[in-house]
Structures are given as C-alpha cells and as structure tokens.
Image 1 (tube, helix red, strand yellow):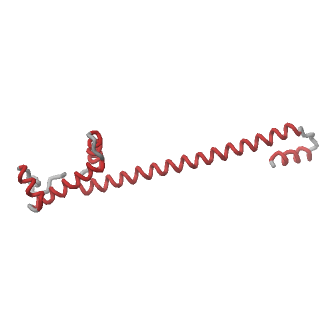
Image 2 (tube, one colour):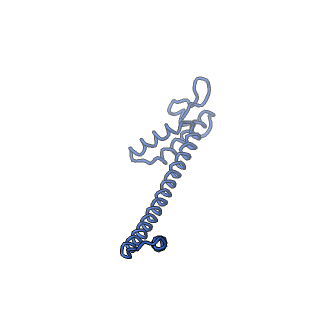
Image 3 (cartoon, one colour):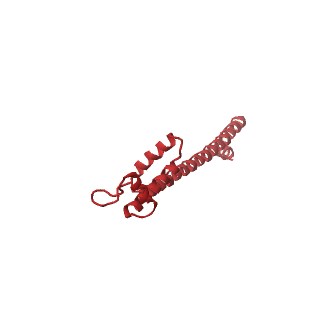
Length: 137
C-alpha cells in the first residue's frame, strides 16, 4: 500500500518509477512493519512480566509487614530470621509462624495463663521487662 501511494505521487510529478526498486521498497516496509509489531508484542509481554513480578514482591512485603506487626518486630528483622531459617533447612513461612507462636505464648506468660506461663516458669524466664511490660518477641 505504501509503495503504491509513493508510486502515484512520483508518477503524478512526472517521474518514471523503477518497478523492481518499488517492489523491494514495499517488501522492506512490510518486513519492517512485521518486525516492529513483533518487538511491540515482546515489549508488552516483558512489561506485563515486570508488573506481575513487582506485584508479587509487593504482596510478599505486605505479608511480611503484617506478620512483623503481629509479632511485634520490624519487617527487616523478620526477613533476617526467615533468611537464617532457610539456611538451616527450614522455610521462611515456618520461621514466621514460629515467631508468631512465640509471641502468643509470651503474651500468655505475661498474663500468667495458659501453656506459656508454665513453659516460661519451667525455664526460669520472665515475659515482662522491669517496667512490667511484655518483652518484645
């Protein structure tokens, strides 16, 4: 199509058109259009993959932040503990779960109730600091 438009324009100006050259030009335009379309599709796919990756990282960080809030620590500290857990053959999820359980048991111990109170007493530990507040996990 683009070759035909150029041909009409040049013929209208009185030029002679090299049909073989025009055909090569037209094929080159078609080939470039296909390549540009393929590049565009690849770019869209790559952008989609990047968006999905960033979204999954954001979701994971949100989950870590939520767990850190429940435990009473920072997300950075929880990520460190999770990393150590993976080095020792456990999983990040297991480490977070264990920390949440420890926090719950310490809360029970600070109130003198439940299994936590007995475990802390047997170990000779106190769940409260000198001010009577629950020690951080």
